[in-house]
Amino acid sequence: MSQTPPPEQPHWGDSTRLVYRIKFDVSDQAAWSELFARYATRLRHWARTAVRGLCDADVEDAVQEAMIRLCKEVDKFDRSRGAGFHAWFQVMARRCALDLSRKLVAQRRKGCPTPLQVL
Image (tube, rainbow, N blue to C red):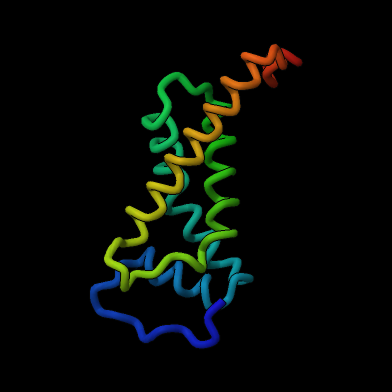
């Protein structure tokens, strides 16, 4: 976690500013809420396009996994490396959807019931 926030750059977008607020103070609930509100629809879209055929519940699981991963890895984002937050987060979210898809396929191969089969 950063000790002091970096000086704001004029070319930073709103999302990058939010992420640096979160990096400086991970307990900033207002920044987390705003970031989630800004990206919730995009996260769903990214999950659906990364893995065709995911049901709505699996899409929501992928969104949740992406947010959890963001919480754990927000310190790894560094705007000075070139990629903006949107691109960085999109890659992370798509990987979460792909990981979930692989997990579901592996469960089916092992004969484990999927959540819908349990109901």
